[in-house]
Structures are given as structure tokens and as C-alpha cells.
Image 1 (cartoon, one colour):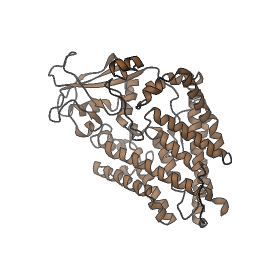
Image 2: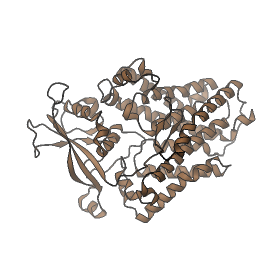
Image 3: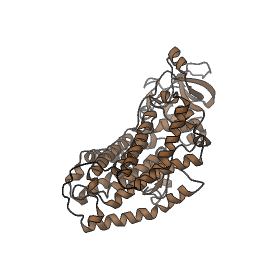
Image 4: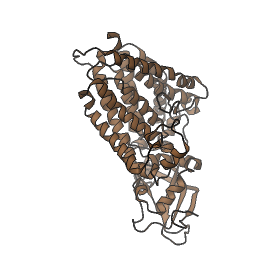
Amino acid sequence: MEWFTASDYWLSRLVFQRALAGLYLVAFLTATLQFRALIGERGMLPVPRHVARVPFRRSPSLFHWHYSDRFFAGCAWAGCAVSAALLAGLDSLLPLWGGMLLWLVPWALYLSIVNVGQTWYSFGWESLLLEVGFLAVFLGNDEVAPPVVVLFLLRWVLFRVEFGAGLIKMRGDACWRKLTCLDHHHETQPMPGPLSWFFHHLPKPLHRVEVAANHVTQLVVPFLLFAPQPVASAAAALMILTQLWLVLSGNFAWLNWVTIVLALPVIAFPHDASPVPGAPLWYVVVVLAVSALLLGLSWQPVRNMLSRRQVMNRSFDPLHLVNTYGAFGSVSRVRYEVVVEGTADEVPREDGDWREYEFKGKPGDPRRWPRQFAPYHLRLDWLMWFAALSPAYAGPWFGVLVERLLENDRDTLRLLRRSPFPADAPPRHVRARLFRYRYTTWRELRETGACWQRTYVREFLPPTRLTRAGQRP
């Protein structure tokens, strides 16, 4: 069975598995700390309501059989515990079949969460984590060298992530072809990071170089992943450097980090290989059967990449086994933000005592510098960015958010950085207004200390109050 395994990638597998376990841990921790306000029994988009209208075959999940906030919390904390165990290397202490089952647990638990997460879990990195996590089940442990076919499938995922993103850019916004998208992107991206202001103010010729280099990395370099070593390792290293550049420039949850993790098993790390027993026959059969299935399912993302109507971030099966990816096919030229405010006044007046709610990650107070949160994912902050693009994005959940703020709901307020109202005195009215934000210049920053300048655009939601418990007018 020497043809089946690649002992040169033993250390590559080890690094990949520990890094992936770390990302699983972040994903489960994000779910644990945010689910009650988002998808809990009193959440903005409750799981019970979702599973009542969507059949199991369309969204396989443990929560179709039973849901309670306590049960969800138990599953999410179990995911954290198993991820931590994998990060510590418990799978290496188990028999081969035991290690595979241990890796299957976080995949099944996170699949259950994503498939009931609705719009809060509609991001491409959710499917990417699941696709990569499923392949990790079949990579084996210390009892066997890494299977060649699984290493190939991991490269195939990385190819689709990068090449798909490159194609969607070239087919989408003309600014990618003109090399001008980065004149706007750092200012208008969903959640800027602490260095985004400085990236935005880099010289425009350097922005052109960045875009051109991105095109090379996403449209040319992916083909080198399938070249002999050391070319493949060099290609993967270049992708890692590009992703680290993106990590510095913004908060994209774990999108960049899972792409970095995907590149790790491509690199042939030098190590002293010790003799490894041959792969048992049952393992060879299982791996080859699963690989054949995944290669067969790959025709849909390939067809999508070749299509002029290419779509981004879509799953073609309810298990998220093989998906299509892509990001920023279009880039906004102007940044809008929804600012949510409350007042204790009995009669809301335009010039009344309106106090602003502060979010953790999204821009608000012009003087407050953005923070670094990625790979942790602030789901409400991300959806607020979409809401500012169009109220249609906020239709299913924004009204419930306002209702929870009027109630001073504890779980909802935990999603925010600060509420301007004490716990025992909720606001009488809440409103939302749309502002245009832009980065300040170097001169404005020195004079005011503010990194943003904002201008009022229009009303997003008029002053709203509870007429009765749990009801809005």
C-alpha cells in the first residue's frame, strides 16, 4: 500500500490538524456565546420556528429531533471540549478508527448548528470549515501515514477557494480589472480592523500593485498547487503570505485563517520520518470510497466556476461536502452605517435625549478606533453591515432586535459593547438612522483624533416603542 500514503507529509498533517482544531474551537465558542439572542428560543430567528418549516432532508441537524436553549448550549460546549481535545492531540492516542470518530464529532455538531443558523450562518467560511473538517476525518493519525488522495482533495479545496475568488472578481466589478478596487475596499469592507485606516491611506500606485498581485495569487498560483515539490510548497507559502496580509487589513472572521490552514498540508515540512505501519485494508476502502464520492460531487462547483453567471459561497448538498466559494465580486464605493439610538423621553423629539448603542466591531462613534476580533466572528455586527446596504437584508430580524432593546433583553445586550441605559430602566423609544461614513484624512486625524467622519443620510427606522409586552406598534 505504499502508493496509498505519503510519509513525507506526516508533520504537515500534524500541523494542519492542530490548527484546524483551533479553528473549530473558535467556531464553537462563537456559537456558544451568541446563540441565545440570535437563534435561541427567544432569538431574532428562533431555531424552533425554522425546523418547523424546513424538513430534515434539506437541513440535517440534531435540532430537528429536539431543541431547547439548554440542549443547544450543551452541544456547543461539547464541540468546544472535543475541539480542545483534538488541539491537545487526543486523536493520536486513540486507535485509527477512534481518531476518525473523534474528528467526526465536531463536524456533525457544527453541521447541526450551521443548518439551523439561517442568515446568521450564511457565510462562506461556515461551509468551508465543514468541507475541510469532513476531509480531516479521513487524514488518519499516528498509526498511518497521510493518504495521498485526501492530501489531493485538500489541495482541490484550496484551489477552488482561491481560483473561485479570482474568477468572481474578474467577472464582477470593473474596478478589479482596472486595479482600482483597493481605493475603496479598506474603507467599505464589512468590519475594518485596527490597521485598515492605514491600509486605506497607502499610495494609490501601491494599491494597484496589491490588486495585481492578488490576481496572480488567485488566478495563476492555484495551478501550481498540483506541481511537484518544491513548487507546490512555494505556491502554498505565497498564498499564506497573501492571507496574512488580508488578516492585517480587516476582520474577516476565520475566512483567511481556514485558507491558511488549508495551505499547510501542501507544504512538505522537513522532519525525521519514523517507520509507520501500512494502512489497513478497511481504511483504504473507506478513504477511496469517500474520495470518489467527493470527486463526483465536484462537478457542480466546477460548472459554477466555468459559468459566466458564477455565484459565490453556495453549498450544493445539505451536508456541505463540496461547495463553491468567492468573495467581494463587487466593492462598495461608499460606506453606510445604521446607527441605533434610544431615548427615555415619553414623547420622542428629533432634538430629544437620544443615546447611541455601541456595537463591538462595527463603526459607530467616529472617535472609536476599530478593534481586532477575527478569527472570532461578530455575527450581528456583520449583518448590520448588510442592513446598511439594503433594508431588505434586515427585514427578518431587525424589528425583533429593536424589540429586545426596548426590553433591555440581557442576551441581546451581551452582543453589544455598551448599552446607554441601565438594566432596570429600558428606553421608551428606539430609532435607527443611516449615516455615511468615510475615513478621516491624516490632517483630520491629527486635529480631531477621530478615524471616521460621518454625515446623516436619512431615517432607517422611525422612533418605535412597545405598546404592550412583546408588541410593537
